Length: 296
Image 1: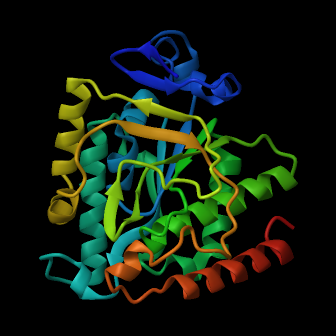
Image 2: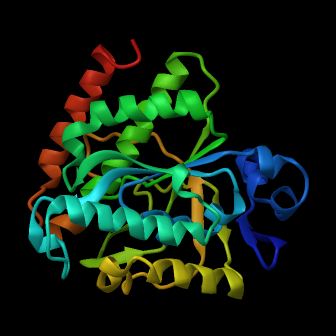
């Protein structure tokens, strides 16, 4: 059953127990009242542009958002730099500047944008350090919401962001601190040998969480288009992401030692250096570090 909370803004998959976090996205909570001014959201995404692809509407809805990039957006392998020519450091600076220009359209100032500093495609090797950095930000910023990637095997850095978020949430719970609501936005994953965008990976167990579907207004679609155009270095890649509804759900508790789905992962189908089996080995080591030293 689908209920229209606001035909211009939201279509909510109706399950009453899910209303706890969905109320942050009600139109009256966003445009009226003081709650939206006090609500702080933290977007933990793998690369500059991921937040715009998956959650552009949420960026604009929360005026006190902070955007945290797990990586600097610059792989070591120059084959992944599109048409850019220069140093890896220069490419990273370009991608950050593109993000600042794009996010300004959503009201996010450059002071609210930061990177945890991992290299693109290599973040799994730095997960314990990345989790410590994120925890320091969470303890200081104390957001009501954290919006990040699901674990779906689309990109190794997307999966690392999900892992870092999972570890950080467990740490905060262990410390008996007030813990934000952790949500996931759609990213992309392999389905029938092709790249599926804009939808979550179906759960093989048959269970499903309530999903909040945000129908973008014509004005929001136009704004998102302008934001995406500012990521000029990623123009060819972004052509594969049509502007449509954006979806959020509560973050899952994943078993990162297991693949997210049967068959090859999307980045394996692309022939990237990272393999899913190796990624999962590194994830298990990160959880061991988490149990032994993090949150001590």
